[in-house]
Length: 478
Image (cartoon, rainbow, N blue to C red; front, top):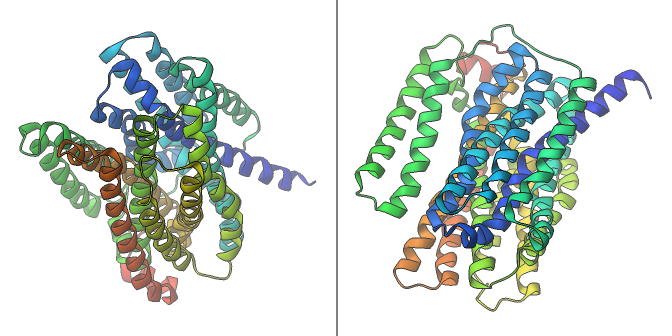
């Protein structure tokens, strides 16, 4: 094996492990929600924050993380991301030593630090692949492998947590992530080649601040609206602040010479469609995991390991199907594969409405397997579709924007679907009936995103040079 091939192999491996580390906490915590509820007497909104305290900082940090990597080195950002993951997981593990509200506050703090580390890792892992594999067709194969690492993280999380919760307190579910991040960060510091592209790049602090306010305020408004009421001053104020911050972000980014996100990218119908699809896909995926975890634990009274076995069928099928999706995208444009995945996801949501209080293992798993196939298409195709939709030198910004939208959708899913769940149950519906309503909302959102992608499909034949000239975009180094 030549040195170049060995370096490529190490880079790809570390990129896949990096995205694996970022996604393990999402499902490992989901399986433990019922146990955390019992140990802390948490309400549904408190449990929503257990998930979103991790995802919100991840979404907020993604855009600037790409610029940090270009300016200061992707290896450095990768190692810092792993270090923050170790610190955050350690804090979250210690939360189990506290009681009641104090335990929740420590847990939220640990999740936030880990989420910040994940926000640094996600765009950096994609940038490492983009830098190492400049050919678009070859890159699609490695991005599909990257997506497999993502799915494996989602798959392993429930099983590991389920086993741990059979023998120890819920704080221990964070230990495996801390150890893996520590070892991987140390290895990356030794073997990962440094790469940067500082030309034309600089930090956009005003854009980052406005993006953070928009994300945090809007999610806070949705969660607290379901808990306090939509007319509550805190709810209204948060939603108004989020909308104002978003408007200010767009205005600032249009004027700054080195934007965090050049919003003119959305002039490309394919890029805009892939961004909308990214948001909806993670909204549905993470939101459904949240719903099913509560349903299996609180309604069917399953043990955490039994919940993990069921959720495994989503992610295991996704992991098995992802390499085939990568090969399929060599023949079908990514946005076409994305539209198919979204449509199949909508069908899966309607199938899940067949689950009742006494649903058997078989009745659950075949439906979740259909969702797993849909997830394989959505997760593998959405990042590739975003990169293909813009000129090559804008691929870094495009992937960061797409990833940020994806994680914002992941934060929005538990927030919105949790509100639907609690409001329907407050009106007298059973948990199963309330979950069915939330699943219909998922199905409608996925179907709408599929139609948007189909409508954008005709734009993919537009030459890249025409797109670049039409948008009048300044080159940004990858």
